[in-house]
Image (tube, rainbow, N blue to C red; front, side, top):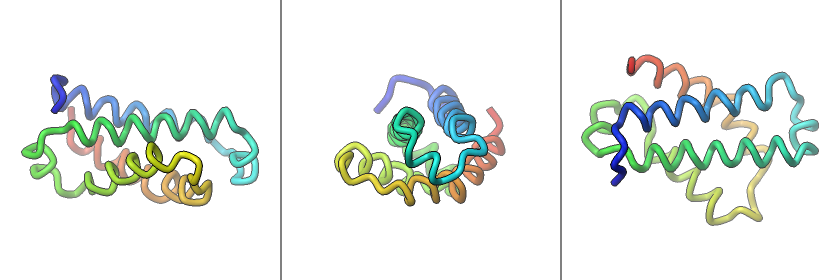
Amino acid sequence: MSNREPELLIGDILESANKIMAYIGDMSFEAFCSDSKTFDAVIRNFEIIGEAAGRLPDVFKQAHPQIDWYRIRGFRNRIVHDYMGIDYEIVWEIKNHFLPDLIFKINQIGF
């Protein structure tokens, strides 16, 4: 368990999610796939999101079940342990369909 307060961990998640959105911006999928620096930066920030989510106390996660903490941590584990097999399409879909919802839900927590 982390020594960091949940508020700081949530801040890490939100900061990394916003960085991902900014790094990709209005980039096309094809441009994203061919830009290794952006891809690496996005993957690193997904790792941070997953690590911070995993360090949140269980009581905090139980108090906020609207966020799928288990899947966030699972994606982080997949990235870290299967780094040669990361599917660009999955990363792109998570960025487009999951990340905006996560940012919205994190902002609703209200720190």
